[in-house]
Image 1 (cartoon, rainbow, N blue to C red):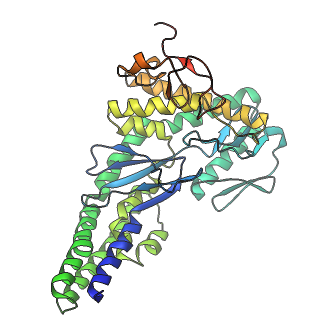
Image 2 (cartoon, rainbow, N blue to C red):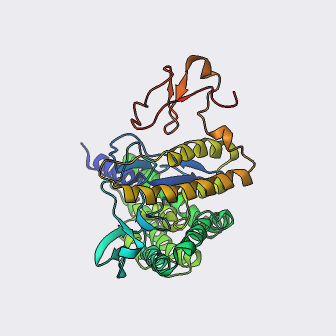
Image 3 (cartoon, one colour):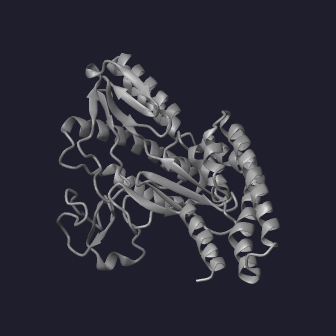
Length: 381
């Protein structure tokens, strides 16, 4: 195989690796190519496991942005706290969920992005700032009276569902990264399309050197602009941006995705979806999200105390979700069932958790064994 062909294949292979996001299944990605219309990007079934999956980034211009939103790390109730059990996967993720009653909590510390309780690792947060905020909230709840803890938790949940701040963050991000995105697209054209085309036609000739020089200049400019954009967006300096971008121009092509990793760090994915998705897309997402949070699944190692805390918190989140739907003029009751679209004649029941349809009238769901099937024609029909 000719050397120029090998180089072309390597260039494409290196870029292909930059287009793969391997993340936990409790992460929800939102993609927008022009900053106007958004859609949910679901992890691919390919190569997934019970904890993680692939979420492919948009590979060609306009590259746009793919921003993640995260489920909570911790579930709270007036009695205690536990590691949050994600409802986004197909199987329970409890694995003997760590939990504490407030009377059991002594020392609360933060080590990097990890929250430690009584000297033991409790939960890994998404950032150091988020870990500090969680530790502060845990301390407040620990010191508060039982009757006051519910109000503190409700205040925290209202912050997760602040749709005005979410929309403002999306608009501000688009405004502050427009020039950067344009340069990233130009770098894609030069490096991923231009360089292979020149190598294919001319081979390793002198014409390649000016092209590489332009690529490196664009790369350097994106590194500097990316660092400045992060400071404008998040009002803080993060030198790790330089360490991540500098080694390779392939990293610079995906600079907007890197900057967007913390865009919605402090908000619930459901609230983000309600703020950026169109009404029809949001209704589909909301139906699935509400079904899973109303019918949580736990593994056998999750003790009753942890289940109680997690269920209480999920109940509070479900109420906040319903308030979001009502504010958007969406009928909450219409989302309790799967979208039948004329299929109800062939089905007698459905699973209220995964919304799978069944011909049998009674029994348990094959994918959610602890969940009983519900008749398609129920109350009010």
